[in-house]
Amino acid sequence: MEDDGWTVIKSTAILQDRWLNLRADDCLTSGGVRISPYYVLSYPDWINIVAITTDDRLLLVRQYRHAAGRFFLEIPGGGLDEQDIDSEKAARRELEEETGYIAQNWQLISTLYPNPASHTNRLHTFLATGAEPRYQQRLDAGEEGLTVHALPIPDVLDGLQAGLIGQALHVSSILLALRVAGRLG
Image (cartoon, rainbow, N blue to C red; front, top):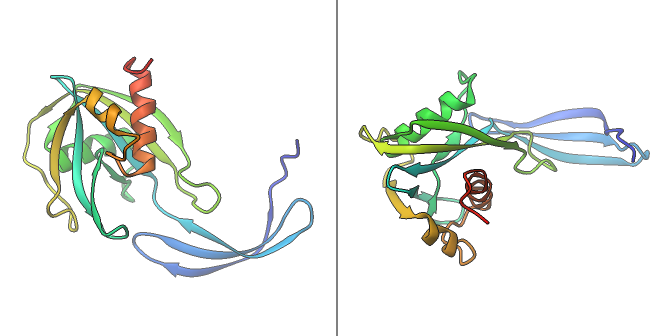
């Protein structure tokens, strides 16, 4: 198996924004094939939190997602801010801000690339257990109408295939975290 990456001959910034950067690369594959343009999206790393409450429920949020034009049930999460150095601290902050909950126990489950074909960022999934309500939500702009729901874990698992959780990365985070927690077969 050959592990030679592509050579970037030229890279052109198309869009630089607070949410994402888009560039067009002029590439030469290890086999000598030129691919241009090859578009690359750069986002900050993302965090997903699979939070289990003290009464054994999965903590979810319901919020509007503009690109799809509808509301989704999701696990809490968000993007790392520029000043975030520690992904666990960022995850703790996101859980508290979006839900008002804190959790006693935290474990990093995985760090994966959401779409390495075109995205540069990583997704850090945390399992947070012993979650209980402690504070009021502190929502960011654009999160108006976000509501918190605590559902029994079996109900969430039963609803996954039917689309209860419509975000694929959240489904994978739930399954990975519940497997580590011993909640899957």
